[in-house]
Length: 295
Image 1: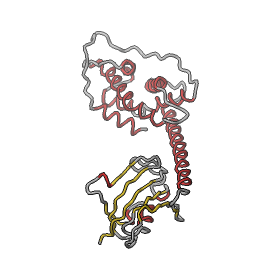
Image 2: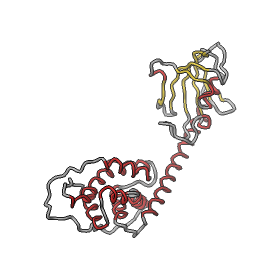
Image 3: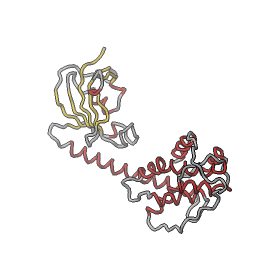
Image 4: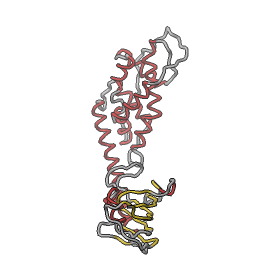
């Protein structure tokens, strides 16, 4: 969470505060009055605490970068809520900061936090998120302290990830069970599944041998995440023991000249970790051509 807000604020630091003309005799120093907040549903609660959690690290940044103190916090909030063009007048620095923060919230912070809860029972609603965000900046602890909200948000986000991963893991396990019953599909004791598409008659490589292959890698939904066929040259060379376990096992069973479809369970692939666009607990499906053992 801290990384999200700080990354956004680094971007914010590079924004030049170009402004439109305003009445410089009017100083926006009236405190922002929020309407009464009611947390009616779980989504209200998670949206509110998400808004509060999103302010983590923001106050020190405002103080260090803009010289904004507690006296001008109302100006920050006015600028944040109204998101109008700021002015070059130094009296509007806090106001301008609020408007820039609003832009960052709308373009980066809120979309990222909403995405984290996609597909879950609770969704982050923009209006309640903003109420929580403003409450934290006003040090309004009616429902939560900012530190408490940040902790609760992280817990809820972790629960969402765990639930999503568990569902995806089961989906992949069920896919493997069904796939094992397909004609021509064979399963090794480790759980690796393979189907011989073209039978080769050359030697089989050892784990330490360097081989040349062509391949395409897919998720169980057919999404291609890697393909040597799309590169020039179309071949790839590596030692059999320098790749994931499922590849090593399959390659050392394949005679040169073979073309197989191999289905690698997550235990023989990347397991619980994310690998680029490959999600945790992913079963990987490859079409592999073993061309030669390199000397």
